[in-house]
Image (cartoon, rainbow, N blue to C red; front, side, top):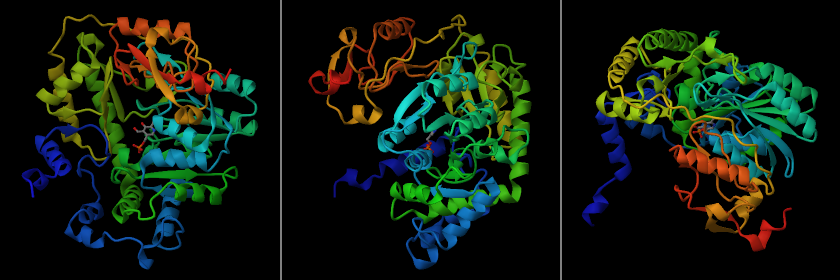
Length: 493
Ligand SMILES: Cc1ncc(COP(=O)(O)O)c(C=O)c1O
């Protein structure tokens, strides 16, 4: 056996990271076990390994649940006020895939925000749906995408009365919410479904201080990343459905189609335990997260150079509410980028954030946090504010060009042949990869789009401003991948 075979690179990296001691202000919600329910702590031990069997009669079948899995799903549905809760061991990625596969047919039109998570692109490819992209609002001040307005939805429905469903992301990654109820009423009046990617909302139901969860606002289905914000293990999510527009049997089949026939029982149990923890003590725990986050917000805003937006800032189009447990700290006033701030916090203060962008650093305060973690974050941010840079408070967000014409569906583009051409000579070709800048994280090109002069010019301009492009294989964008012309490139006009 060679020496290198005696290594376990993943386990080693995990141990090293945990030993590094950075305090977690990111997912998973249990925060490295800090908030783990005693039953979860017991599961991840030798005893847990003894229990890690599946497919035994007593342990039920995720695909045809009739025993403990059915009971656990029923309890979850009851707690969340849903008709059905489907357990998913492939994250909200899997739940989003199933949500679409369980509701639309090949060729159906669906409306969705241009900056939807890539799992929804995957869902469009799998379900062979035809997307119509809606442009979300942008906050120029904070450099982030907000929600979609009712007006935008109305316009799209008028242009596409054939649409079968509207998919929305609610709350946004930064916790921003909008009037989902009005949108639900509108799309239902037009005989459409409202499907919600609620990856960041499994805790909303447990505090009246937080925005309404999607199915309570009228959504027909919502996919929640239980693992991101509350106490299950990474990779576990729930798909909630409510109301007569959802065919429960079809949804069960879709969820089943996309999951392993040997689901890990520890993951399923962790979903069940997360539900139990919220049933036992959710209001207190989530209530504490809300209080800690609000207190922190006030104190952060007293630090010169930092600004953390709050509920009262949610008055711009596409924003009417906020999950206040998301702390988006704008560092422009320090003359540095969010990425620089993230680096300082990580390596000098041992604080790990959820993400950073050009203007902001995002921290998640979860049910697992206490005064101790809140105090450490505050101290770290006070130290950060000493590191002033000479950079000016740059401002790069500006109105996006119109969404290019889509000539291939995501599925057609996915299965087509591609080639690489010089970026500056790609006008008129069909994009085969995504091009995006942060801020504001809204794609300028997605596979299937006809590349046009206005979009090309805008992309070059953003690069000249020094923004880093994300998406394409060539990060300098000297070249871009496009659909090979002699196949579908010319046929789809
Ligand atoms: C908005 C949104 N939807 C879906 C997902 C996918 O969720 P999961 O990681 O549970 O598969 C994410 C992940 O970050 C997300 O931010």
